Amino acid sequence: MNRGFKSHYEILGASPGASLQEIKEAFRKQSMLCHPDRNGNTALSNEIYRAVLNSYRILSHPERRAEYDSFLKTSSWIQSHRDAPKNRAVLGAPGTIDKSFYLQQINMILWEIEDILDSGIISRSQMRMMLIILTFLDRWVLHPAGFPDYFMEARKMGQTDPRVYIDLLCSPSSGTAHLPYSTLDEYFYDIRRRSGRLLDRMDRQSSEGAVLEGLEEAVLEFSNMAVHYLSAIRDEGRESEPYLFENPLYRYRGYDFRAEQPGPTSERS
Image 1 (cartoon, helix red, strand yellow):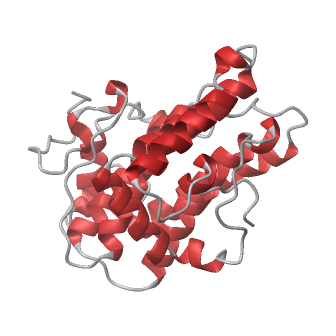
Image 2 (image 1 turned 180 degrees about the vertical axis):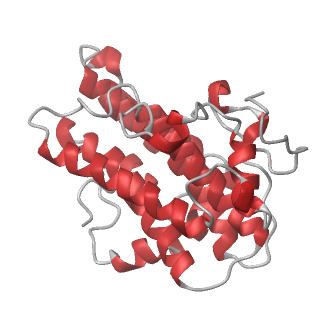
C-alpha cells in the first residue's frame, strides 16, 4: 500500500537531480502556495507546510540529502513501490497531504526494519541503531497515541532512559532484567503489533486527525532519524554519527550511542 507516501522530492515538486538552487526555488514556490498565513491558518495548511519545511530541511542539507538518496536507492519498501508516480508536485490541491501521509512514514520504516531482520544476522551496533529507532517510536508516538508498552507501564518504567532499554536488549546478560522481551525481534514485533493497531484505528476514523493530533512533528522526526540510521545499516560497514534532532525536546543523551550508558535504575537525563 503506498497510500499517503510521498518522497521529499515529490513534496517540493522537485526532481531527484535538482540543484540546491532548484531545491530552494521549489521550496519558495510551495511556501507561497501553502504557508498557513496565506491559507487562513487552517489545520490542513499547517499540516502541509510542516511537511514542506521538513522536506526542505532534508534536501537542502548535503549530508542528509545524501543519506536520503541512499535510502531511496536501497530501501526495499521504495523498490517495491517504484512503479508509483514520480516527481509529481503534490501541493497544487490542498488535500493531498493528510494523516495517511504521516502514518505511512511509520509503516514504511517498520517494513524496512522487518526486511533487515529477516535478512539475517546483524551487528551489535546495527542492533543499537534499530533500537534507537524503535524506542523513539514507542516513547514519542505510540505511547502518546494510546498504545503504550503496558508491561513497562505496570512496572513504572514507561519513562525510563531509553539507554537502559537498549542496553538490556543488546546485552547477553539481560536474562535477569524485568523486560517482556529477550531479543530485538521480540521487541520489534510488539512494536509492529501496536503500530498496526494505530494504523487500523486511523483507517476507521471518520474524521481525520483524531489519533495523531499533535504528534505529526514526532512522526516526521522519527522518519528522518530512521532514514539516517537505516541508510547506514544498508550500507554495510559504514559508521553512523548519532542523529541530531531538530527539536530540543528529543535531543537528550539517551539516543547518543557513544555516550556512557547508565545502569538499569537510571532515569532520563
